[in-house]
Length: 147
Ligand SMILES: [Zn+2]
Image 1 (cartoon, rainbow, N blue to C red):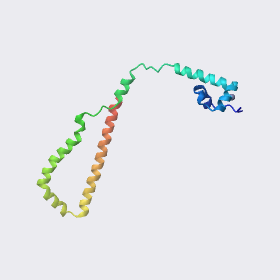
Image 2 (cartoon, rainbow, N blue to C red):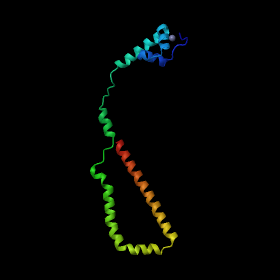
Image 3 (cartoon, helix red, strand yellow):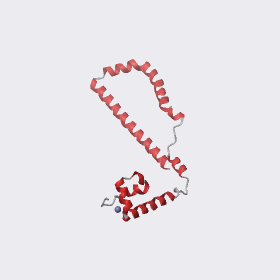
Image 4 (spheres, rainbow, N blue to C red):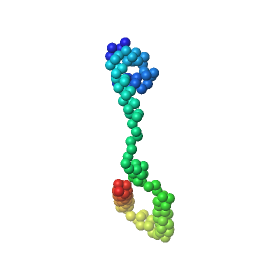
């Protein structure tokens, strides 16, 4: 017989699933009044927990959660980037066709450093504008979701 009492986890396992316990633990608990009392207390506690009703709310939980979820994108919203791209292509292609040679001549006449600075400035400006647009969009969506 084990001199030390089993730990609480082993006593709980005995209270719930006696057959799955170690034979040494079963033997100890069967012969130890202190551990038997603990087992009875745990069994009483477990049966009390099982007898509890599921928590009830005085409001419609499903509706409260569903109103917080973002609405799924409509079919029209999914095509907005494609439409923007088509509009830019429809405007840009004729402009480039008409003024393309002139534009390329201007670019080829510029010194390499100057065109590099212009290109780099355009990329940096585009990046900051894009980040600002995304940030303001997320802020507006968050405000909508909280209200
Ligand atoms: Zn014991």
